[in-house]
Each structure stands twice: as structure tokens, then as C-alpha cells.
Image 1 (cartoon, rainbow, N blue to C red):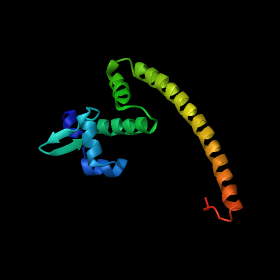
Image 2 (image 1 turned 135 degrees about the vertical axis):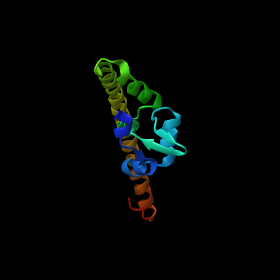
Image 3 (image 1 turned 90 degrees about the horizontal axis):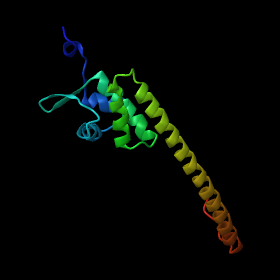
Length: 136
């Protein structure tokens, strides 16, 4: 028996339910060549490999990686060095992303503080005019 005969497949609806994505999302990732489900007519059948890749795609998206970056990192799996290149490149990209996210958080903290000061000022102005400010 070869691998394709023993492979278990997951349908598109099962993938959607398991990963909380839409069929359109899966078709888009297939179009972008991030997933390569087996096709039987119009039916898409996803392998364990597709599931693992989708998990990594969704994690990468959550962390803010572009689809091109995700594709590059996924493609490094096949370099043939026991994933050393893939892991090293992923680590480098993750460090850069972490730095960018921390910078964004710092910028957000400044903006939030500034907005809160402005809200407090306007609330006081409204109070002086006998108008109750809306609750937060």
C-alpha cells in the first residue's frame, strides 16, 4: 500500500469547522499556492500536511506576517537540512516582528494616554456647562 492509499483526507467543510475559517479563505490560500489539496472533481480533500500548513499560515497571519513571508518560510521546509534554515529564518523574522509589535504597542500607549487626557478635558468642559458626559 502506498502513502496516498493510507492518507486520511479532510473535506473543506471539516477544515472550516476545525480551523474556524471560511471556504473562501481555503480557496484563496489554495490560489496563493499555500495549500495544495487533492482534487476529485470539484471536491477538495486536505491532507495532514495541509492541516499543518494551515495552522502555520493562521499563526503567521495572527502575528502579522504577510502571505509572501509565510510562503517563503513554509517553502524552506524542503531545503533538506532538517528544517535548520526554516527555523533560523522563522526565528529572525519573528524577532523583527516582535520588535515592530512592541513599537506599535508603545505608539498605541502614547495615543491612548493622549486621547484619555483629551476625553478628561472635554468631560470637565461639559460638566462646567451642566452636561453629563456619556459613560465609558
